Image 1 (tube, rainbow, N blue to C red):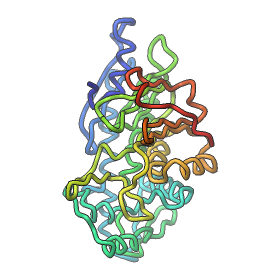
Image 2 (cartoon, helix red, strand yellow; image 1 turned 60 degrees about the vertical axis):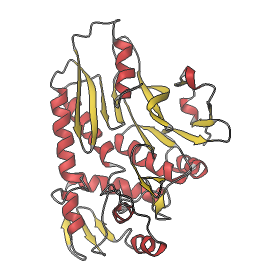
Image 3 (tube, rainbow, N blue to C red; image 1 turned 30 degrees about the vertical axis):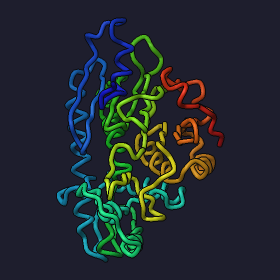
Image 4 (cartoon, one colour; image 1 turned 45 degrees about the horizontal axis):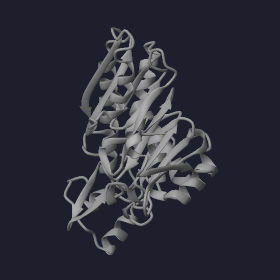
Length: 340
């Protein structure tokens, strides 16, 4: 059975017993509504720096409190020009790019839908079509001009849950590099950055969770100096009348996305990996293929879908030699190429 920080278990198990671990420092803490952790080489204060970075990002981007910068923006009235920080501006700019490229599959203003379905209060509510249509009318109700945002609808609410953790990981990695750290691994609730490599190896080994059993790992992929993020409905959901609904919203339909079991993206930055994995999960395999082909040929992706007999793991060609299906899953899962 794997722990919440399964990625770290896989990475560190490679090291144990075969090298001197005296300069390796592990850390783990709770933040941003999840568990964070990491492995740092030759920098014992890495955990404190990472935690402080994540706390700062949360103060800016949390949609769960009115005290954050994003919370203040959500409370703003229509036609009120709000000056925003560089962090919020960066997240909004990337969100708009993914929104545009994905045909609306990713939307930073999905807050009303999250609230309607009960994800903020963690108590599900099955909305009517009229309620859904009312929320859909609020999506995109703002104007963004460089360092300011003006909402055109007072009830338009931003939610960066699909991008904030990746952004936080990027900020932490930048701070660690500024301190001279060259090798380590940062994990924020499954948003990972692999910096450099472990001792005596060229790559970190990162686990891909089984979307049908989140406590187990179905495959592992080797990577270095890359970010990886996975989107799936197994981490956060609500049950309504005995039916489980995942928290990833399809902004086009106003309903929880279906079609994929999970979507994983490997990219140069955490913010792209995080946001793009959400968009791919919403789009499904065919439209995901088009998005990657047209706009993101530099990233790699892993899509897990449920087939009639076996679940299939679709991987982009660049990963074919770097991903390994664990032996106990070889009779239940099938890896195949995911051409662009």
